[in-house]
Image 1 (cartoon, rainbow, N blue to C red):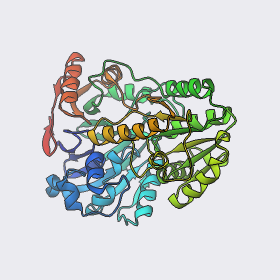
Image 2 (cartoon, rainbow, N blue to C red):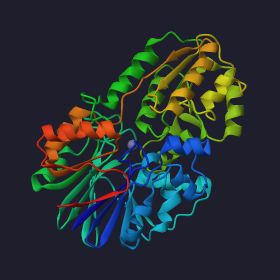
Image 3 (spheres, protein in one colour):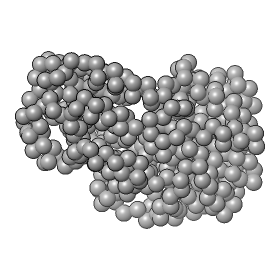
Length: 439
Ligand SMILES: [Zn+2]
């Protein structure tokens, strides 16, 4: 018998966690933070030691007490990729389970970096599995199917059981022209569909957006168009983006070099994600750029850079207006780095739509406008599949059952409508904390 427990991420975009029970074995997929609540409570994005009960109470991490009776049956915890809403709760709750963590090499490097930074000790052994490989855990065969997203080595997880295959597809886009790494393994998805998928647990974040999500290459072209096109010879160029978006950083670095500027990355989280990607042999940014992580060193680096602004392109933290980020500190004048009229600030990101981020970004932009800098926004494409990509996935894998995940209510409804259009026999709508047997 297969049972699903929707622990987190079925009523909000965040704190993703799903338990899949196959007879007497349980596999947990994802263990994430709900970042808005986490930041509201800790006033910081960094993972630090906070009482677990408090984090559960404020809704910042999943309430896994709903599987207390399954606790001893858990054999593996699988974070699908390196975003905090998928692995950020690991340091707080994974030690409860006598189970190994199974993830891709880049995701492992990130987990280690987060734990090292904050002195967390994980009891769980971390086993790496490359995308497009399989690993048997007694009765269940786990398969990682390579996909594309806004961070490297994201995988879809197929659990092959004697009752059929469960396919977990949270956080992906179908990018046929990725900037880093290969395109998704469409061939394998079709094979799985032909063999038969019993259940698809599916990212529904953009199920109500009737589009195909553009390739990361489109964001790369937008950056090229901007950086090679603007008149900025004597001015500072400052770019901010998601620290985990290694492909985006690659484009920014390459076009920065194309306009003959030395690229400097400034900020703790940028250093953390880039170093992890380098340890996983995905990129080698250190070769041609300067990376400054510690805030004390950022201060002295900026003082030097200010003397020759037009020789550099700065990549900094602070795309969501985080108050402790490098960009916010520059805007407030906390560093010896003065912004002048017509200096360029480029936001290669979207604003994550929750009130905390919206307010913080608005405040940051006000500060920047005050300095009369040029602001370029939304040089970005999403990392999530939109409605027409989701239709392609459903048609490829032809699931018997579908559970919308990674969603709020309106997205869940949109996914149900789409699944009905695609003639999926059973659509199961779940809320956080609920369990369901898959017939
Ligand atoms: Zn993600």
